[in-house]
Length: 97
Image (cartoon, rainbow, N blue to C red; front, side, top):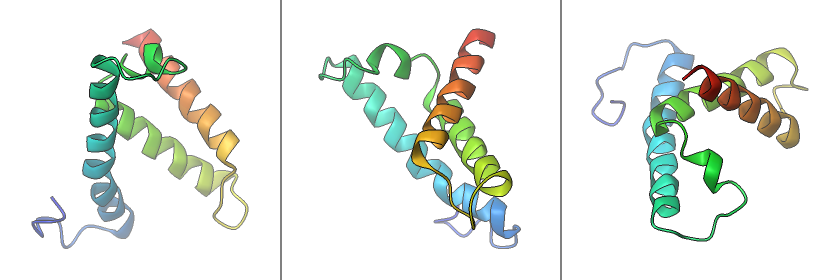
């Protein structure tokens, strides 16, 4: 959407999310496809394919934005904290899905 200049007047955060959404969703979908073809990703493979890529992308971006806006030090977030919060949110969504 951003590549085609369809959203030039959106507020900054919305345009940032739109710019991240498609590449992030594509990366998640590619990883899910590798898992389906049997590539060795045993540690997270059973969990990574439980939700559609677009839903996982939205959850991850929402959690990262929340971490940075609420608890981040100078706009930063710790990787472990971010990973745990994203994992918890995805787990909660899977249980409600």
